Image 1: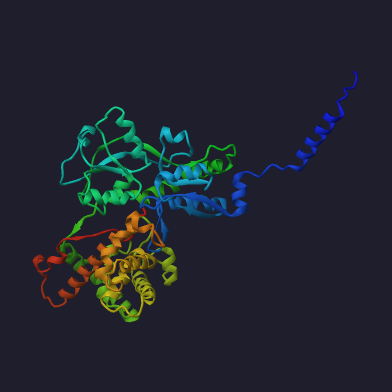
Image 2 (image 1 turned 60 degrees about the vertical axis):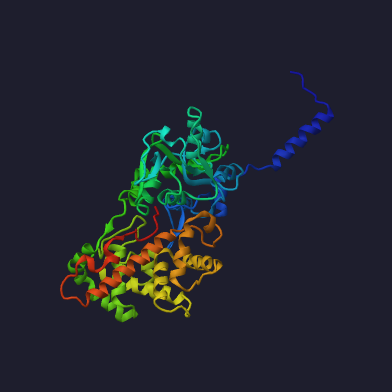
Length: 478
């Protein structure tokens, strides 16, 4: 075979290409880059079913899932919360984060833009109305009514699809509020209806008992994490292995049970129920409350009122977020206050009192009783950082940030996007803290009042406590 001779210029070009390729190195897979940096960047949203800062740290179903995945990778998580929900996918596509975990419904339109992981939960889009008002039973019943949804959500997308067959269907898409505020607006009769996922409705109905489901708007739909359509699928594959593991070992089912398995609508607890439990349960634990008073200086009736609000004096109580015991302590808080077994009634009560003292030391000394204790209770429920956010909002409104009567007017703002996005610590269930404190005040006053009674008082003797709404011990982490 005769040798092939290339022109000199061509030979130089080949040599340059070979040298250039020799100097290039293939970048490591994305998952290895994340491990090397030690940080997984995740887009999420502030909501009771996803991610929020609770009384004793961050919480939420999505939060716990993401943290478990990060532990698998051996990295920390950096969270990003868009100002508007409809920015979520743009941020992901623009590579401002590695993934999105925000209770995202898998829809055909979204699948064109992003790649979804395996489903970890099924939800149904449902029409929500206030129980005392007219119940719509079909789509046509929404015509001419005030319907609001969050812009860019699967609910917005579904209504757009339905409008093609039903031109008389109209609604308002809002970017300035969150899902909980829409529920509040229905409860308060500010709007007729909203659309929400079944898991969110189950959570929020505990706090807004007048909410009802009118009808299902869709069949069950999957929720999943979102990733970009990238050639490098190493992170996606690591996520698939993670979900396979937590399905096989039961971790996912346990997490779903903790957050959603025992959700019930809030009950109204009347005075007779409280008094019966004073007779049947309190005598067993009263010596521990009195011992805690001796150590902490906090009146035992106050401690007992907190214990009833938290657990109904049940040492084995456990919330969806994992806090447990009579005083409902997290593992972290229990360790901080030297509690080794949270289900031990004496340890829990003593630990709860110590934790209250820890909070009390952070409250400005100028704040006097009884406001001081009411603020302590609010911080016990939602965390001291959120209480400070509420006090700042109170002061900005021209009210007194040292008075509970003023603070309680502004605490509900912390669940409204317009306000919580201005604060340092973001979303929390501020309206729950108001109910929490007021309920404990009622229980405390009844405990003090019964000290002077020989026989069980009639229900009519305590009208303030006759109908008490009992919220969950902590924000729905749900």
